[in-house]
Amino acid sequence: MRAFIGSAFLATAVILAVPQAAVAKPAPSALNGTWKLDPAASKFTGPAMKSETRTYEVTGNKVKMKATGIDASGKPIKFSYSAAYDGKFYPMVGNPVGDSISLKRIDARNVEATVKKGKAVSAYAKTAVSSDGQHLTLTRKMLKGKAAPAVDSLSYVKQH
Image 1 (tube, rainbow, N blue to C red):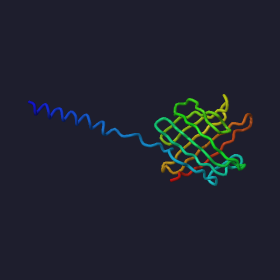
Image 2: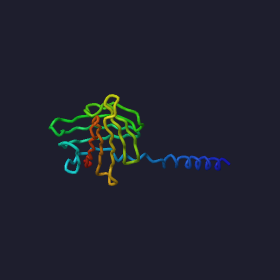
Image 3: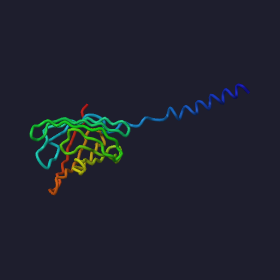
Image 4: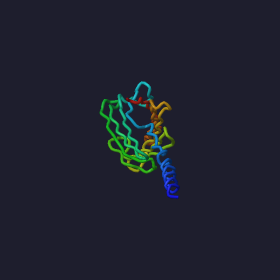
């Protein structure tokens, strides 16, 4: 009887351990990493940025983004944010277009963002990572008062 109880205990322990061992960690976000702007492949409504490098660090539902570069007039660009994919607005630092951002994950490779300057929405953006994970397209619609919105399509290449 003692052998049976010991065997039953061992079998139960093995059965209980298998599901825990089989639990996989979530796949890393396709957005994770460093992305360099390809100005030649991008389409700008106005003058084109000379350069930009974005680094995304996605952990679960949280995103940290840092961008540096040179704008169309040769001035340095440097902005960042830390936000969650929850539709709430979070501070954005250094971006002349807005001071807060709201993110919504559409699926594993697509994210939508709304940017505000003060209380007014100043831009919308959609970020899409290619199926091979090597290209990122950022389509942004910048609102300019009563003027027609500026719609740009920025193309980035993943850095290794």
